[in-house]
Length: 164
Picture 1 (cartoon, rainbow, N blue to C red):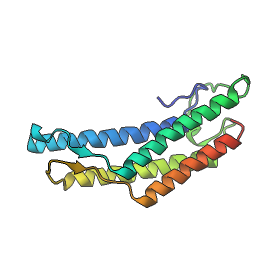
Picture 2: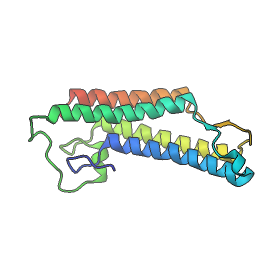
Picture 3: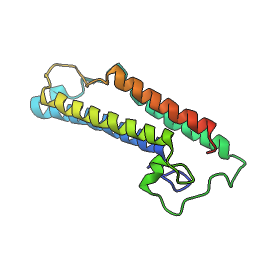
């Protein structure tokens, strides 16, 4: 799920899969916890808050835009992106010439930070969950949303301006 067509791990795919997996896992865990503790009458009834939806949308938008940018640059230039012999974890933070790339590093680091913070929030939420008909998942604060958005924007900006 993380591999690009050049046999390298894709930073944009990585952050999208990581964030989606966390959000869907938290949702399923909260619904399951409600059912286990209070029965089937509590199936569903879990809302996703606005900032969490926005952050998830930014993640998907970054993936789609990165794909479009790369495809547009490589089209008609078959030698522009050569395939790697094997994928490596460092692909997530390096460019095609194996040099550390600030845009990739920043996006991956911010994504991992956001995932850790949100995972902790979700676990704490489940420890103190109130059994009401409808509950709202923990939200992402405005600071984390801003940092995440800026990291994604920086990544896309360097991808659009760079060579590949």
